Image 1 (cartoon, one colour):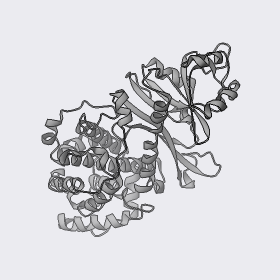
Image 2: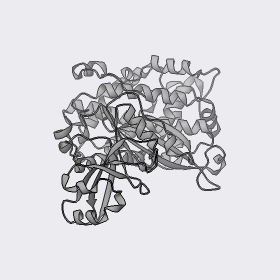
Image 3: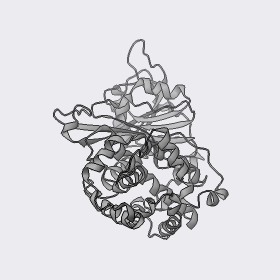
Image 4: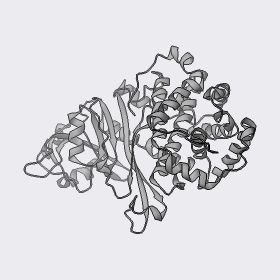
Length: 441
């Protein structure tokens, strides 16, 4: 899931005018061959129909019970497309066997391929958000409960239960997951390796990932982080931005409560340089910046290695607040795309369900990006949930297109679907990033 080189927007309409140019038969065949997936004998449920059934079922509500609804569409389509095969039924066992034996790596491969194309589709105007950095990521995790029978595979922090943890590296520039780690619910967030050697990245990190080792790794890579101050951490003040606070140098944060009380009724912010470790010979000896803002009747403290003067304490706070986008993503992926209701009882099937939901999410984003270009509207002016509902209904009624021998059969409805999304309204209120653009571009 690495960034792809962007293509000049003038070439995009020609390059991505058809669905088969976003996901081709050749690419699907290559991925199947790569992971040793093939229909070795005659089956009712071939690999490709199974793939699309799982992707489309992620858009249905409930505990994947509406998979039966899609199976009805599947059987109807097969009776029209391949009447000679006489397919009149598809059992739960047939789907279950495919969930167990078709490698989930196929689904991950398709997601990565779509992600690369999505990054190409987005033009410079659409990706200018947080333009001061090469990319900006929200790092967070979310837990999903599973069937108790999976307790030995996906252990939970609660005895007698099973759960998995989704740790994600979510790009704020493109609004999609660029790295995913699926582990048992007991695995600590700090074991998620998401820092790359590419410099000038911004990582907005949830408090659950707090570690000095992580901060050092980000600094060594030439990148930046913002995270909340851990409650148990009592940093030593080594420098101040405002010389009126020079007397604070040499004190711990816990020792300046009187000043903080005075500032709460005044400017409501403080800007310090601190050492986080209290050890005599600390492994993490880097000076970092500690900014504090008095908000909602309490002080909120954030640590960062961004020292540039343009990044005021208020702007640092607003930066960290952009993590809300990954929380929205988790809500969408778990509740709108039904990932909260995993039905598989084996690890391979669970991974298929996860990546099926991610593929549907990304496919909707691709349609929104193309619709934005066609309509001339900014991508953030489109509501994902509104577009998703239209895409879901439209694709369910055209499932038969995806069951034909070539994905070229989808091309003509792909144009129609882009037009439908482009014509949708009223849009959701776009988030205002003008404050960021003034400082980051």
